Length: 267
Image 1: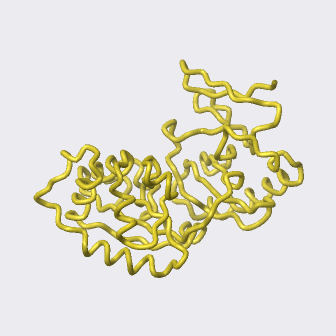
Image 2: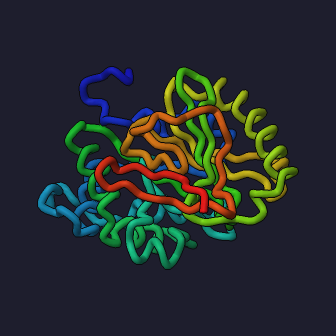
């Protein structure tokens, strides 16, 4: 299916099931499970958000899905991170408590039906567009918050990198050797990423090595769009200058609600 197909959901080109194999190899080991129509409606109904958008007459039980999930999760004895190809249910209490981690199919289904607005919306637009959504179970990895970065690519140029948890000061990231190693390793990774990514303009998240110079792993890709959090950059100010930005010790973040923008201010 072409990305220009009229039934193609908005931003679906960033979803994991549509990644080319070269891009997927830059990420964690994971297994994708396509959903049929009855499973999509059943998940939407059980999730409970906007349940009127899902058809109870089309929804069957999820026994088959649970079995397929169990088979996939068996490949990852330390547990898995559960998500749709589009997004995870991290907006729920269950998702926050567990980190979206599951050890079997029943737990995975419980996570995906725990009252997530994100999941409800994505299943809804999939049905509307006659698009087949996927569930992905990904090898579990504990991530340190100071190793996650958000990167911005426009016209296949790396125009900015920001620490993902942009409101937290991490002393390690203000060490010059770490920052130099980060910049070098991110540039090396970007050479591969830009080669395999099918999209010219995109925001992508990565995990870096703790010392900044180890292997970098792709977490996910997001639309190059103001709906995607710009972290220490600003969509309104268009201040993407190619820099790697971390929160410095003598800075704090100010928020301008009228323009929905953030600013770094020296104190």
